[in-house]
Image 1 (cartoon, rainbow, N blue to C red):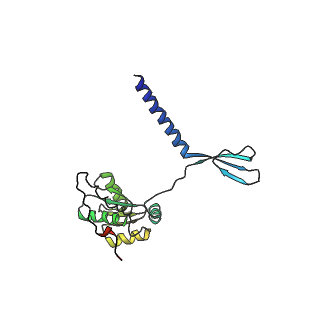
Image 2: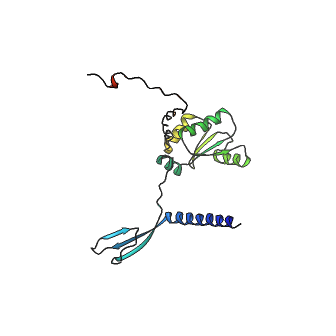
Image 3: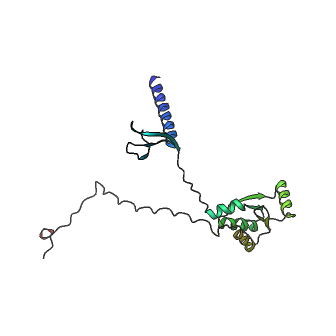
Length: 198
């Protein structure tokens, strides 16, 4: 029972240490001070005793935003969000959704087979015809017409193609297999000591 308790205590201690380290990694103590020569110094180390005007600051972690949407698509999405009113209408609705996917346009889908969504579509267009593309609050196109949909997305500022994806890195060729221990080794005979003759 004692070894299990020691192991459990060790695991808990390691967990507490990793949590403290994670919190410390997100927030860092930084000092600003003036050294004896009058230079302003910024450091993460405790200033020497003869420092003047010492200020301690806590800095949060740095973050880099890695959004796969290009800036143009983000801006268009903020100004003119896209909604596709659709249902299981076969090839027509699949083509409508496919157009948005090919362009990389983020969109929400409203299934008009549900009664509340059918009422929403009727309030927007005055009709129950689908598919309908809504871009922003006011613009909408009834029925799938690729040229009109493309023009509407162009006007809203959506890119014409999705962002290119990074190709997977090429894998290095496999290492040659090591010779087997039981395989016979052959040494080619050399004549004249193996040196080239002038």
